[in-house]
Length: 209
Image (cartoon, rainbow, N blue to C red; front, side):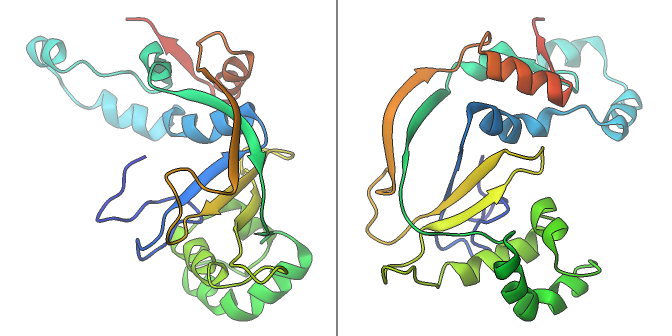
C-alpha cells in the first residue's frame, strides 16, 4: 500500500501522516482477505469498464487484468511470516471502550452520516476520517505499564473470528517494531490453502493470460 501526501488510508492510520501503522493478523487467512479485498469484482466497475472502448494497439501495449482476477506474479514479492506480538492494545469494539468512544466521538460519527457510534460503525470502518480520528486519540494514551499504548486490536469486516492488530510506530523504533518478533517466514505460494480459501471467499481467480 502506498501513501498519498504522506497519508495512508487504513482504518487506524494517522490522519495527519505523522506516524505509521503496521497491520498484522492472527491467521494467514485474515491477512489474505484484507490485502486481496481490493481485487473483488464489483458490478459497477465491470459495467464502467464495459463502456470503455480500447483499440487493439492500446490493449497490447497496456494490458490490464479483468476485475476479479489476480496475476500469479502477485505472490512473487510477498512473504508470509509467523511471529509473536507483545504490548497493550485498545479494543474499540469492546462494550467498555465503545461507551467511552461514544462520549467523545458520537457527534463526529453523526457529522459523517452515521446514526450512532456503535460496534457496527467501528467494524465497518467507514468513513475512514472517523476511525482515523479515534486512532489518533488512542495513540496518545498510555497502557497499564505506563508506556504508550501499542496499538489497536480489532475484528476484520470480512467475518467473525478474524482478529487483526494495528501496531503504532513510535519515535526511535527500529525498522521492525519492537513489539513484533518474527519466528519464521516463507514465500507466498499460489497453492497456499489459506490463500486459495481467501480467493474463493472473495470471488477471485488467478489470471493466467
